[in-house]
Image 1 (tube, one colour):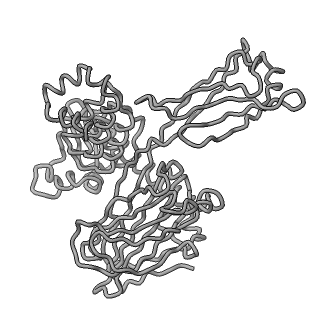
Image 2 (spheres, helix red, strand yellow):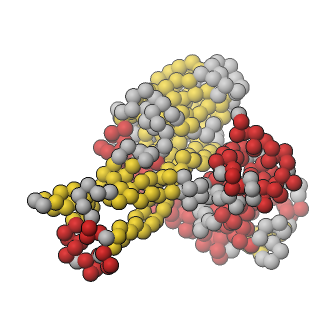
Image 3 (cartoon, helix red, strand yellow):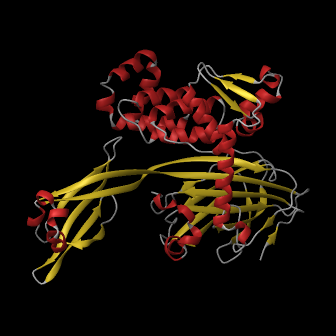
Amino acid sequence: MATEVDTKREEFILEWKIKNFNYCWQKKGDYLRSPSFVSDALEGTKWNLVLFPRGRTDGNYISLNLRRDLNCNGPNIRISIEIELSSVSWVTFKSDHTMRSSATFSKGSGFGFPRFQKRKDIFMLNKDIFLPEDTLIICCKMWRSDSKSPMIERYLATTHITVGRMKFLWTIEKFSDLQPDEENTFCVTSASDEKIIMFYVLTMTGGQIFDEILQIKLTSPLPNRYMTLLFTKEALLEKKSHYLPNDVLTLQCECAYSTENSSEEIEKIYPGCVDVITPTLTSSLYSGDNCSESFAALKENLQHLYNDGFLSDVNLNTNSGTFPAHKIILSARSPVFKAMFTNNMKEKSSKIVDIKDLDDDTVHRMLLYIYTAKVEDLCWESAFQLYMAADKYEILSLKTKCSAHLATNLTPNNACDVLILSDLHQDEKLKSAVQNYILKNDKVIINSEKWERLMETNSKLAANTLCLKYK
């Protein structure tokens, strides 16, 4: 049954998407915090959601808390809360999965649901409903019954769990001599910091009477897990000319793992007095497939608009190229561009914006993201340049994506560059990540030419980083 929002009250709605939810690394009692949000409808108070993926005290449930920030404005406030899981963006359903309550919040206080949802329901029984494309969607609605005027605020928050992926070949020599319970081990390490991700152990069970079954045991840091291969030793030996050249078995493997990092962004969807109908889950108009197709079509149309330059009204000029664009789209995505085109600046009446400090590739990538929210084929160097562009034009979601890419692709050769970048742009999250990396790899990095150059040009930053080792 569709639910009509009561437009006689001030209401705040937050949708929090957690992408790659299966890769949450938090243990029981550890939490993931949503981006903070400030609600004008709730007297300018500041809030966030706190999710315990493996429960706060009971590992069979995920737990969810709503917290008011300690450092925020406004008096003590009593609000009603409605929190539920959704399978489609902005589509909620009324069922046993909805939690409702009322509470009075002072600064720094919180209210929670320790048994918000069974993990078994999310990850097994109703995975198709709760985790479309491995994304958990939480809808939080907050309101005051004594509101003075109809007002609805909507925010979209996104937390992206960073996933590392590796492909590798695992060769087992003298395969025909492999004996039951004999172990053949392969260690998978991170390319960036050589941290051990997983041990793969090939073992064989059976023999004599039973078929010799091949198993792979996954171990460290997780509890042991077993995978049984689809083929037996006998089956491989029967086709050894094909599968066992020179008596060597080669397994092509792919490993996906959590990097224990995340990026986040939040944006205001629209303010104002509106009537909103929340459709039912079964509404064909708002079904997941239709929504996905609509968004994909919109992105494709906007990319064509960018590629063709149709009806463009401004040119972005670099030292070697010109990029036609549309002022209204640039303004919608960047407050800096918006100020250029609306305030008393030369760009307001001109059709040219000079961007001499960015190269063509960076400007192209920035515009592609502005029009389509896509980042294509991002390497370390392009992420570095794109980060500076995103910071200059205050495209915060793009800056966050670039920051996450830099943090998860650190090497001894580039760590000093990222440290300087994060310090220059006051990015404390990125700065903390690279400082931790430097301290873990101090013997290699501190003896490098780049570290010597850092001590010459920014001795305070170098000293502050080293001091962290003794705190």
